[in-house]
Length: 337
Image 1 (cartoon, rainbow, N blue to C red):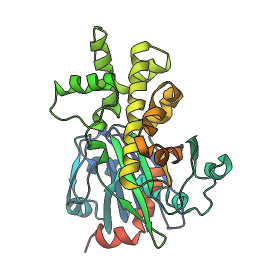
Image 2 (spheres, rainbow, N blue to C red):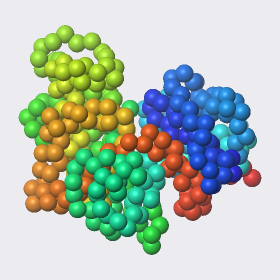
Image 3 (tube, rainbow, N blue to C red):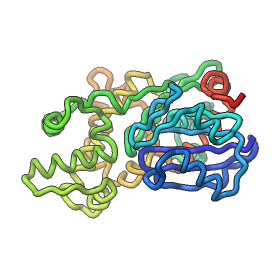
């Protein structure tokens, strides 16, 4: 089999290798996308560094993957599937959305017959419970989380087969829930004619909100990275801390909307380093208030358990699962014939 798997976002590219279907992932490497001009260069570097014989490739990509030309949503890379397949001289190549891979990484959890949300039961899936609920067995599962962008995928089942509901849910309209968020929307609309959830729930979302809070408080402003904003927030710097709590509040609104749209009463899994790193500030935000502030559907959303993924390699594991999934092998994989 000799399968190379990759989980590529706007900032980082994670690679792994699986020799056989029964093998564990090995040669896990993390690369910085900015260090490589093209995805070809990054893949070639990874293969040569680890001296691998690669026969098949699955690339989970932050962006739509249905066309032959794949463009990343939050970095400058793009590629032609057929040309990349032939250039790398492999037998097959599959490109999937990165949150589809994240979703499939939780396939076994989703199919779990025991819906007990006890710590012991969920820790085996490297999950942490952040909100209790009553999961509904035959419902859908939402996977989402802020990174360089905002990824969204819903898993559904038919005859015990898992299927992804793909989309670009991070790019739907930002819907403010209070006066401060309305001010934020008006501020961002001065610079652009469309504001999405991703513009306020992501790395650049932190930067946008940080800029707004400085402006509102009539403070001088300089551009700083999302990681710096996060570090300042964790050290209780007021403006950075307010920035993070606003982002978490809006994330609560976004998650409840996704739950209602796709009927995700099985649960919600939040992934990504931003949330995990800053989660100690979650209770200081309006995340939980906005989450259930849904009028007559308050209980509908309130009954949904929410988990945090602690597995940094979940996207790679999900990519490997997609390689042997009949839905993808028949309709989405390109072959070197």
